[in-house]
Image (cartoon, rainbow, N blue to C red; front, side, top):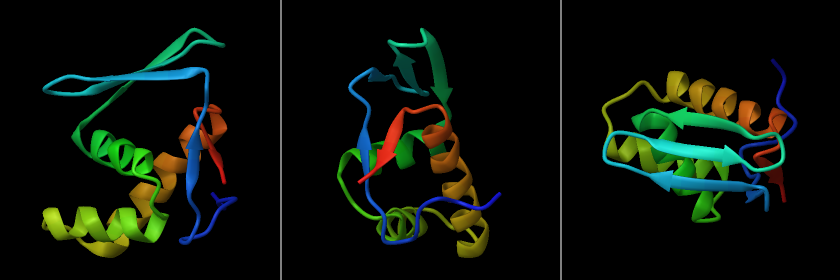
Length: 94
């Protein structure tokens, strides 16, 4: 899957998306489509960093600093997750 954004991209959250973080997960509701999405702990970390208005590269760096992970695998996972949010119109590229 080829992404429509780069490692320096930042995102805006759709006005139609509301999120609620709970101890084990984050739930995002798309008010337009009435779909909801449940994020696991990695998805929640990525979501929280998107809200901070930082680039994809910074998101990857902050997660890599907190978790013991292979950075190449993490980069692919982050890009895949952000691509899915873009596809669902939960976020847009700034």
